[in-house]
Amino acid sequence: MSILNVLNKTKVLKKIKKYAKSHLAFLVSGITLSLIVVFLLLQFTLPKVALFCDETTNPKLSPSIIRGEKGERGEQGPAGPSGVCTYVEALVTNILPSKDNVYNLGSKKYRWKELYLGPNSLNMIDEGNGKEVKINVENGILALDGADTLRFGNIKFTSTGISSDIGSQDITIGDGLDTGFLRVPTGIKFKDNSVMTTAVSVIPGPSGPPGPIGPTGLKGDTGLTGLKGDTGAQGPKGDTGAPNGYYGAFSDFTVQSISVVTDAYPITFDTTDYSNGISRGTPTSRIVIANAGVYNVAWSGQFLNTDNSVQDITVWLKVNGTNVPGSSGHVSVPAKRSGLNGQTIAAWNYFVQVTAGQYVELYWSSSNTAVTLSQKATDTNPTRPTAASVILTLNQVG
Image 1 (cartoon, rainbow, N blue to C red):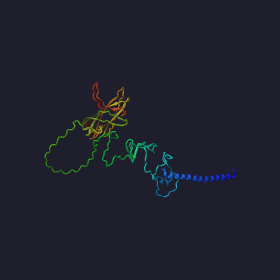
Image 2 (cartoon, rainbow, N blue to C red):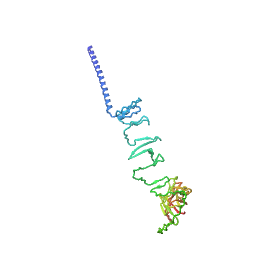
Image 3 (cartoon, helix red, strand yellow):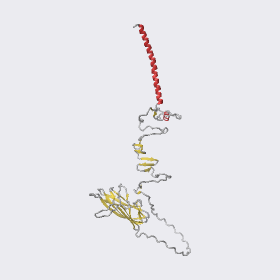
Image 4 (cartoon, one colour):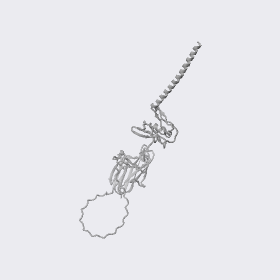
């Protein structure tokens, strides 16, 4: 190979290198510019979700990101630490705070317009006991799980009823414009365990003591004697009073039991055997006496014990809902033995003085729920009649 050929090849190689360098720089610049353009297009065209920026860390960014438009310019406050707002292209995972019970979703000034939740999605923590509380809706029922009380103002809806935070405050159902009625399926039960299932007949209260006698006035002059008038017509004959006073006899042919040994239970009567001025009231434990006087109240009850131990019962008298001192009677009912239930009959009487319209009641309690007031059907060998669970008689003695 000649020297001329070597020189010519060297020149060609230099030209090729020079061309490659110049065009390579152009190619790299073109690719870089294309990537920048694609990045900017993605930033302005792809959907984004802006995670909320805490306005205390970046007050300038929060309004524009949340509202999506420039807000009114306010007074410039002191510069705070820079906040961080994170954009995501599409939400494909949970959004979790970095710390528990620290950050808020929205604020008093910047609120979310509407909140859409799926089923079983609202969970909270009870500030008092730390337990989890869940609010969910199922088949049209809004349920509050993990809490047993819902309060509106001072009125609370509890697991057992309605109450008030203020003991003296009335609890009103309905308002003055309502024309409907309050419907109670079975009845109303009061604190003393008495039950009202129908309207209560009005019973006059006891008469008050007589007032003091006023001073005697001055004696006036005797007037002239008037002319004797004609004899008036004879009035109708009055009703004959009860020859032996007022009386009543009542009985019950159901099994009466108790469910709580620490509670008192009224003895009820389902049958009126005789009645003259004395009748069953509402509820039927009340025996209403229409006329004032002294009455002999006598009763008897058949108690049955299905427990294997001796149990005690107590029976006492109430007048107009008030316990009569000294009226309690205590009886032991025999235990069950050889397959036969323990049985006993308790009976005694009281003398009570009542005003017109007052009522008397018998109450009882037991040391065990196995004790009942029990009736008996007819028996054979020999033939014997039915037995009432309880009998009560009243007759006026004064």
